[in-house]
Image (cartoon, rainbow over the protein chains, first blue to last red):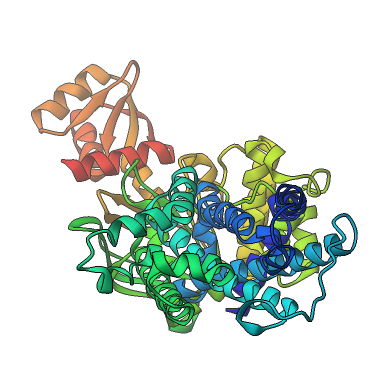
Length: 254
Length: 295
């Protein structure tokens, strides 16, 4: 398993997109900083300049090509026979994507801190109490940790789709639709009224976890779940999608 | 001796849904042996190779160095190298990085690079490689880490003459050191130069499994015959129901009839001028065997 993770890391480190995405993330954060000049500075810092959406976008692209490149280059055969079990191939990819996810979030935190003191020079005290009666710095760290869960849920869906569909373009499109339209799909599912108590547990609802953390009052009316429920739901769905994806991957003919 | 068997395929059947792709295949490869897996397109050569590598669902038993291989347990494949269908290469990595990804021993990797003469381009990105360069890199990946069993599917694809000779020598050197090879190729003349055993497959079934020397005997089953009076000889053969094929100046007869022919010609007073075993090339023999199998 460690050998498979090392191999996946080696490939990720040598892909241009890995590093280009990190640079693009900086410029997107910078542009967002200018665009949100009138918004609450504490909220901007908490949500690290809305980096969660950009990180999601990057992870969908990198994650979708994670499997498709193996299928296209015929490397999936070598990867499979050289690993002692198919599950290691699948899990190592998921773990490496998680590590990349952590790296992107750390980078977003770093960019945010740098921009706070340089270009934007926000007059915000890090220890000032903000959301959930916690200091701004803790809000920012908690939001990033919560976003790790939201993004890993999306990656689990990306992996599931990658095993069902060989075309990375279709996987990217479908994943982005789920990521950015999940909220409206979820609202539609809950429109019936009577089934809200059941439908509020639909997976699309969980995608709002990070957004709800930053703006509880507004999002809780849409999701009908509190933060803890959304977090638990996301973790359960991660488990379900990872297992379902692996079962499809196991049966896939190469 | 059982301990010298590097790969054992015992009653293996491979399925996709209800379709049987390989039916009850049984053969083994001893350490140092080079098996030529020959068969027409769609015969099941690649499927057998993929099955051995635990990439297909199968029934039966596959053992590598006495350890079981299953679809979900590849522990036995630690010392197996393979090149299946197309070289498995990441285009965004250099040739060296592609090798590093799998290599356990830097010295072994450097030796392969130099033996396959890849030094001039090994540090370039693989996306710029020609078909032959990719093929050599794929072969190098298969031969990394001193494997005990190597499976090569069409290894000579896209290789120029010099590279073909180099790869052939490399295969022979590894086999001398005890590596067992299972190689499929459409270039039968090339395969003939290295293989020690032939496994012929058609319609998912193994129809022949012989050592090369034994296999070549099949080529001596026909004889080239010239007498001082071929016209009379033909009449005699026809009268005694001896089958023959007529050519411009000679006749082709079966090995089984040779003694009978000699006696008959002697009795009829026809002198033999020449009698020679007819050599057929591997291609011809394979086609003959396959045609016989199809009826």
